[in-house]
Every structure is written in structure tokens, then in C-alpha cells.
Amino acid sequence: TLDFAGRLAKRLGAPVREEVVHAVDGVDLSVHKGEVVGLVGESGCGKSTLGRMVAGIMPASDGQIFREGVEVNTLQGAEAKRVKLRTQMIFQDPYASLNPRLRVADIVGEAPLYHGLTDAAGQAAYVDNQMRRAGLDPAFKRRYPHQFSGGQRQRIGIARALAVQPDFLVCDEAVAALDVSIQAQVLNLFMELRAELNLTYLFISHDLSVVEHLSDRVVIMYLGRVVEEAPVAEVFARANHPYTQSLLAAVPRIEARKKAFTVVQGEIPSPLNPPPGCHFHPRCPFAMPRCSVERPVLREIAPRHRSACHLNDAA
Ligand code: SF4
Ligand code: MG
View 1 (cartoon, protein in one colour):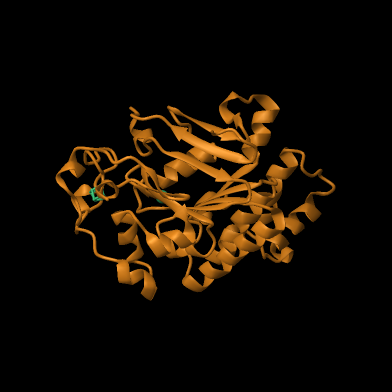
View 2 (tube, protein in one colour):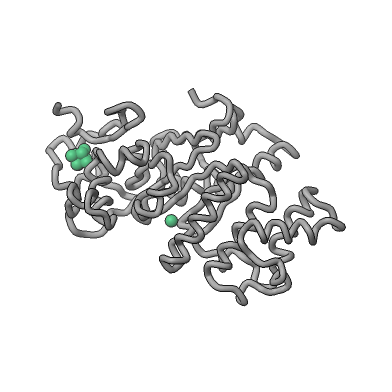
């Protein structure tokens, strides 16, 4: 079921042994061409790990990534490189991922030259175009990253990613470090670019309200597992999983808050030693005896709506 055109899938077998991959356990995620999927959960839930695996910058010890029906790991040489370029990652802190000693012109222009997407003669104009597309004035291309504001630095990161002509962007908390007004501008830029360049997104955030306006579908993760998955409107109207409902409590909207409740206080448990059964049971106000021993299966509860909670068996 993972191999039709335009589909990228990540599948990880469970159980997994190594610590690093413990962060993601039995997750099966697909993103359709042109779709924006919001991946939401608290920090430490494994969403960054999953994003890095999908983007090919972190290997999965046990799992597969498909791109348009082809398993990415089976590709070699130039083809592997080309497929890897097509997925680019945007990080929370662009400053940490931008070389402080390089001018913007080089940050944006190096990779496309190296990969033959432009030549030395065309490089300057190529860089100007990428900067304009990301909302930056090419007049500033001789400057260094520290000479820009946080929002502008994120635009440099976006220009650098777009410069290698990806069709899939994995954005990990890409606006989390920005002021709210700047967040909106950068989110709008992502949406403009989606329309202009026909981009597909995996948009990772701890904040449901950030993904609300740009996602088609939302995937909720808790301690390395997907607990709910549904079209975005469905999540806000009919969240099923108690964990998703608790996330809605943080969203400043009256309709959402009506259903919201507070989860049991306390730290989120360590993903390296998650509670047995339903990982959420120590914090869940609806926990039943079976919740601490039996893992709930992610299953369809309505068309295109999946949830992993034992409460769904009672009906
Ligand atoms: Fe709560 Fe049990 Fe559902 Fe887990 S399975 S979310 S503990 S009711
Ligand atoms: Mg993270």
C-alpha cells in the first residue's frame, strides 16, 4: 500500500533496539504529493527524529522510506543524491544551521553550483532569484547571517533550501523561535511557496495552532507513537484521543477550549523508558485498568480519521 506515485512513506518496525530510534516506534506515515501534513506533539515525542529520518539526514536502524514507490535506501550514486536533494529541511534555529563566516550569496549559492543547477556565470542571478522568492532583498547578499533579524535569517534558510529545487520541505519548529507577528509572515511565505512551487510539506510543531491554518492533515505523536491522525478540520471539531484533546486546551479558540481539559500534571515521561500499555495512561484522566497493560492500536474510527485509544472499543 506504500508504493503509488507521489507518495512518500516512512515505516519503522517495532520494537526497535537502539536508543536513538527508540524515539520512533512503529510509526507509519505517508505524505501525498502537494499535501501539507502537520506533525504535532510535545518536545521529546520523537517528531524531530521522524522528520530527520524522512529528510534522510538521520538513518533509521529499522525502517524504510519510499519516494514515489521507490525505496530511497536502494538508490545509489547520482540518483540517490538527486532524490535526497528533493527533500530539504528547515530548522527551528536558522542561525545554528547557517555558517556564520559565509555571506548570504554563498550560503544560498554554493549547493546549486555544486549540484549543477546553475553555472558560475549564472550563479549571481540565480541567488538573487532565490532571495527574492524568500522575501529577501538581493541587495543584502554580501552580508553575513548575524546582520539579519531572526525572521530574515529564517528566510535565508528557506532560500538556501529552495535553491536546490526541492519538492518536499520538512519544517521542524520552523517558526517556533520567532515573534508571533513574524511567525505569521513566515507561515504565509510557506503557503505562497506551496502554491507557486507545488511543494509538499511535513510541518513539525509542538503547537496545534501553528499547523491549523496550513495543514491539510494532522498527525499527533506521543512518546514515539502516532496516537491520532485526521484532516485538520476533523481534529479541531472531533478530536478523539484524550492526548489530542489536551493539546487543544493550549489553542486559544473558544470552540476548541470547550472540549479541552487539563492532563494530569507532571513531566512527560522519558521516551527511552515509556510507560507500558498506552504511553499516555499516567497522564490520562480516562485511563482504565487495561490502559496500563495493553497497547491501543491505531485504527480508523471515521473516514480518514484514525485514533489509538481503548475508549473506542467500549462503544
Ligand atoms: Fe487514555 Fe486509555 Fe485511551 Fe490511553 S487508551 S488515551 S490511557 S483512555
Ligand atoms: Mg524537536
